Length: 407
Ligand SMILES: Cc1cc2nc3c(=O)[nH]c(=O)nc-3n(C[C@H](O)[C@H](O)[C@H](O)COP(=O)(O)O)c2cc1C
Image 1 (tube, rainbow, N blue to C red):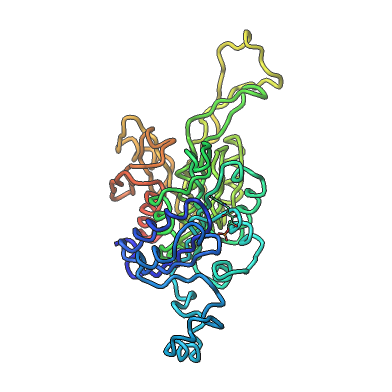
Image 2: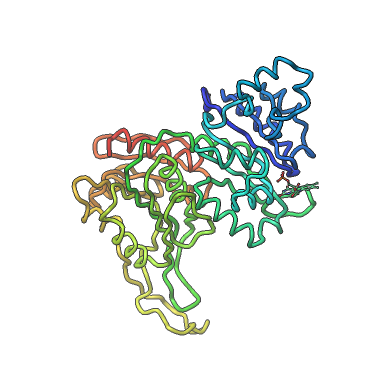
């Protein structure tokens, strides 16, 4: 059971998706968690506390002033006694919970959390809570695209909260767009990630992600289908385990994870420059990017006319993995990715040796833009097949292996 022995605070706010939180609560319980529900004022318009009480098996917390001057105690003398014993935060001492999950989180909650408001039990608990926090926003797509949302979500990430972005699809308001609460599977995977042991504390990890672009002229470029999802998942996983993470990212559509320093680049030469700048202070370098291997020999300063594009002469771009392998000190670890079609362990091993890498992840082109990944993790003396899972889980398995080899 994934959440065995864990106490999870589940905050629910007034979104049309609030009913999905009942199912989230059920799944958390099924996976072994002790779940305590905090309902915002808005949430009570959408779901009844009784549903959550029945599913979680715990009383629902809805009002921070209840029990301090609540009427119900008048008729319950035994609770009055409790009050004398300072049972104001009666059901659970929030600070001892393992994580706080807010799902769904309204635009209102996101704004209040970003501004530091503590106007009700959920927002007060958010500020009083010192453990990992995961926020899953859900709202209409136009609201989600509003720049105030981008600003507030950026602020939440800066405050160290993890965010699970809403998904695109049909919305309750009849529109199609990004705003649907992320799937329970995604939310629980992210929560599990946040609860991992802090076994990378003190480690500095440098990760590259995404494709690079090599321009033929000011508007056209050579690139590849890398989505950057693997590198971003690795960055998130490493940061959630306490590492100090720098992510050097080529152009992607992804938002940077919380607690990660992200450096944006466009070309392979820029990626190489960013890596060489950060490499000295790095304990572990993971090359998950797909830098474009070649660049036009003589890029044109002006847009080339359609009828003048003939054969394109190219030259090699810097080999970033080889550079790090060459420059690494004894205590530094370098891990590369090898995309081979068909998969060839022997070829991947040759690449590992040629680039002086400590490990290579062999994977196929089907992983490139996918949400999932599979592959083989190859070390000098052994190798391990990694089954197809979400990229986040794949990233954790890779980091587990890294920790076990005492990198
Ligand atoms: C039918 C209906 C559905 C709503 N769905 C959402 C939603 O999905 N996301 C959102 O941010 N606000 C939504 N709202 C608006 C919030 O309920 C409103 O901002 C409320 O003040 C939120 O309170 P809370 O953040 O304390 O829960 C909805 C309102 C109504 C009437």
